[in-house]
Length: 232
Image (cartoon, rainbow, N blue to C red; front, side, top):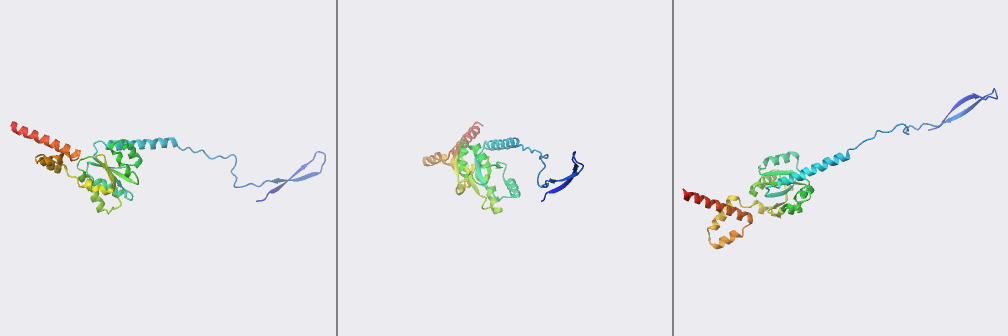
């Protein structure tokens, strides 16, 4: 890029001789931004976005807490790699007594912190979808996912852990949950124990609190039915 010169002629007052001089013009740099031009300012709604994000997080925490009401079991499932279609199909296979929710581990832990569900902390890693079971029939609630897992060959998408009656169950302990006796089986076994010798009664009293409560409830109902029958 070179400078250019332009000739300017003028006459001095004291002389009639015309003088000519050359004025050097500075070249124009095409890459320079004109000083009079300024880019339009951009405004990013950072505070608004942060407020919306915080609201969504609070709503998620509240949703989890709502699902914990009358919840008997809360389990985590590794859903990494699941397609949207598979996730939709899974939801359709679950009974009405269960609820599947996608939520970040940190938000779920915030909801369960300080409660009996806090023992779920060991599986608060990776990508989890959360299964809330609102029925005492735990095996029947878990089975639909097991069937779905086998059908779709999702060996890697296993349970990451669960909490039942305040106790944490790791992936290798899920067999215990899947083989829990049904309500009918508990009634039959424990009511039979009440009619058996004292040794059987001791075993009954040593049963988990859930089973003992259920059998006592069934026993009371049985006595009520007998009393009504006698009155007639």
